[in-house]
Image: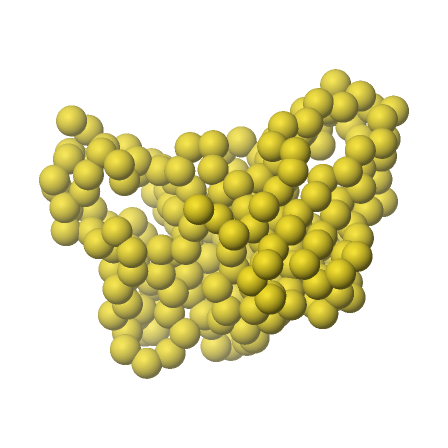
Length: 114
Length: 113
C-alpha cells in the first residue's frame, strides 16, 4: 500500500470550475512533487516543494496553482482548465530533494476536463 | 544534453522466460538511476535504484539491473517472468544531485501465456 494518499481518485470538472487535488504523506518527507501523466506517456514533473517552499516550477500554466500548507500536505488548485489538461495527476514525496532518495508515489487522481 | 532512452516501447515475452528491458542515458555529470513499475491504473513503485558502489543492483519481485558506465546503460533483467509482471516499466535518472528525476518513455512488458 502506498503511503502517499491522494484525493479524489477521480474528478470531472468543467472548464469554468475551480477544484483542488489533495495529497498527504506521513513519512516525515520534506520534498513533495506533482507530476502529470497522459495515457501511455511517462510522468512529467510539474512542481517540487522542498521544506515547504516551491523549489521547481517546470513552466506550468498559471491555471495550475500548487500549495503546501505544511510538511505533510500538498494541494494542486485547478481553475479554468482545458480539455487537454485531462490526465492522471500523481503526487509524490521523498526524504529530501531527490539526491538519490527514493520518490514515493501516490496512486494518482484521474482528472477529466469537459 | 542530459537524457534517458528506453528504446523498446513494448516487449512481449512468454511466461517463465527471461526478460531484459533496456535503458540508456546521456550525461556529462554523475547520475543516479532508477527503475519504476506502474501496474494498470496505479501509481509508480520503485523496483530498484543505483546510487554508487556495486554495479549489480537487486530489487523487488526478482528484478535486477546492472549499471554500465562505459556503455551508459542500466538494463533491467528478470530470469523468469510471471503473468503478474505485466506492467509499464520506467527507467529514470537524476543528474548531479538535482531535485529533478527524468523518466524514460516507458516499456510495456506483455507476458504471453
